[in-house]
Amino acid sequence: MIHLALIEDDEVVRRYLAAFFAGSDGIQCSIAAGSVDDFFDKAQQIEQLDIVLTDIGLPGQSGIEGIPGIKRKFPDASIVILSVYMDNDRIFQALCAGAVGYLQKDTALEEILNCIHTIYKGGSVMSPTIARKVVDYFAPKRTYNEPLTAKEQQVIAAMVDGLSYKMIAARLGITLETVRQHIKNIYRKLQVNSKSEVIVKSLKGEI
Image (cartoon, rainbow, N blue to C red):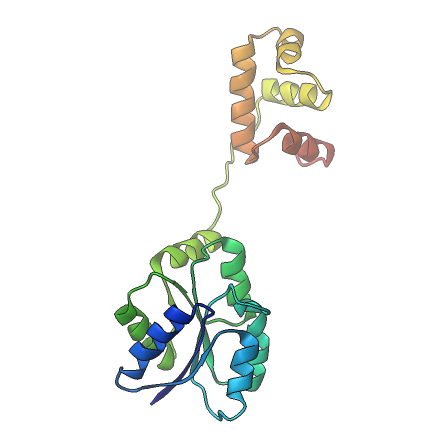
């Protein structure tokens, strides 16, 4: 029997999830709380929880902020985020805090149920979009080994001197379009996106 807890502030969603899990074989929905504080109030008489399915945007403590306290209360419980938030910051904050899964809130109920069984068996789950974000984050970043040309070095020196594109063109005796092409190549080779980043790298001696 999987002992499950829900933390969801939307009453309609909370009741819907609780009813679904209550009718699922092998699962006991021990707690259905509207906030982290409500969860702890209801957890006082609970001795065992296997999985805690929690939203992030909650009254009081967020679902992420509540993870450490939940882990102290139930060290063996696996915590899964079920949220509409898909930004990198929240995803990695949740995983670093100890969540073993991160699901989008529009995930089908049967799929959530399958994920719960997977986690109970020691696995970890993520919605495909979330998993891709994690993979992309840890994937080796592409690097460019092309050296800067002498002309590109001159363009960088002019940028450091504070010259505009037109002034760089005049100093180096090239067209404005050629200046733009050189700067495009400089950005690509240095893996930067702005003039200020180029200047900082030059002043730090990184070029």
